[in-house]
Length: 190
Picture 1 (cartoon, rainbow, N blue to C red):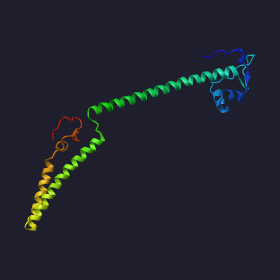
Picture 2: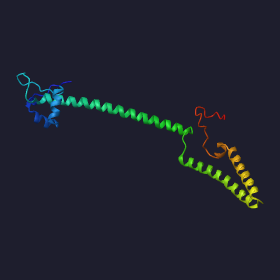
Picture 3: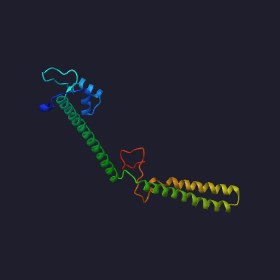
């Protein structure tokens, strides 16, 4: 899309002055000339200009080059930003869906649940320790104290082994999921 400039801009200009007008350095001007982006132009007689540039031709060529670059980079940058925005929106939507389906858990809620589970286990051991202390204190011999201690520990271990994850998590919104099979969460066969 080369336009013909007004005749008053059809004059010859040196490379240094053209660089100043276009606000580029000399090596950049040489590169653009070698690549055929900025043409030297022709003089008034129709011959090629060998030293310097025809101002109107060089200005139009550089303008067209910058316009094409801006369109290309601008469009590509816009498309890239639009693609990033679409992927971010899709990620946010999938996270919202996962949160609605209960796949995500609030960290504070999980910490509270784990604390309550630990407190339940601790209370089981604490109750055994009180009973154990009383039984050992009232035992008539060391052998009887040993038998009592073993009986209480076996009792608490049996009680803890009877507790399932669902029992420990009673009263919470969290579900215990078997880590071996995540494909079917509703199937609770053990």
